Image 1 (spheres, rainbow, N blue to C red):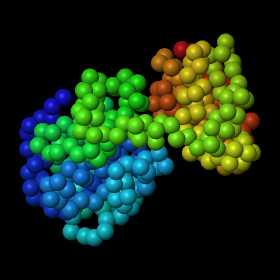
Image 2 (cartoon, rainbow, N blue to C red; image 1 turned 90 degrees about the vertical axis):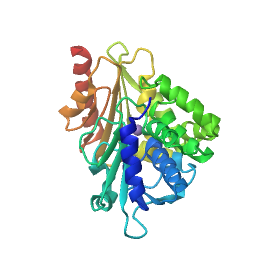
Image 3 (cartoon, rainbow, N blue to C red; image 1 turned 180 degrees about the vertical axis):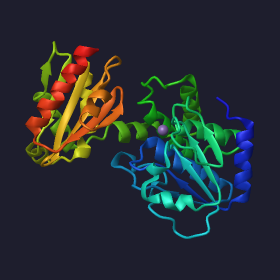
Length: 325
Ligand SMILES: [Mn+2]
């Protein structure tokens, strides 16, 4: 992949005019959001710029090890910024509380790989075929003659490994692999990234997952699987809703299962449901029936009722989904 030379030139021209820069990324930041923002910040500092990184939320537990993660702020430290750069962001609303700081800046650059819902940005470096924003940024740094330091390489590698699901998802392109190789050559810390992102489950989470698997229910020739976690289960495991991240994929990883759901009553009276499916089954349609939404193979909805009632409704919806596809 090569970024269009005219886009690189336009970005260079913006940088030439700027000395104080704000970088922003989306709320609930993932590895690509923070890796992209932090790696870019270091590159711009090589160019002698004053740079601050803004995000609505601070880094989640599994990304707190990222180089220079402490520089992520919830508001700017001063005034008089002349350029904003937002990364890995498909809509300006997802900046959350830091959005207003970008609206008043004289110029804005967007660097992203989502299908864009909105069109802000005086310079837009967008490639919807790129596996990660960090992949675009690695090419940008190379084309602009920057130095890929070890910390930048770790940040960008984290973005790529996160967004490709450890190089398992369909977006894992030859470019994602060859660029990752370059980042490793430049000192990316693969081992820490692997350990901290994919192998640092909390004990409370492991306990609750064990319970979810043990009490799992199956139907329709074991093609449908679901599990309910009550408020009492959360108390027993000393777990929070955040600890259930990825549980539903464990159910879907069973070879017969085509549609799976986890129902969580992390707080009494509020049931959050995550639904996942294999290729042919549209679970977003199921979620929409109950006021939720999402993608075809990954969706969710919320019930304000008791757990049993929510279970009856969602299982009925999933049965219909399986039967009609
Ligand atoms: Mn991304």
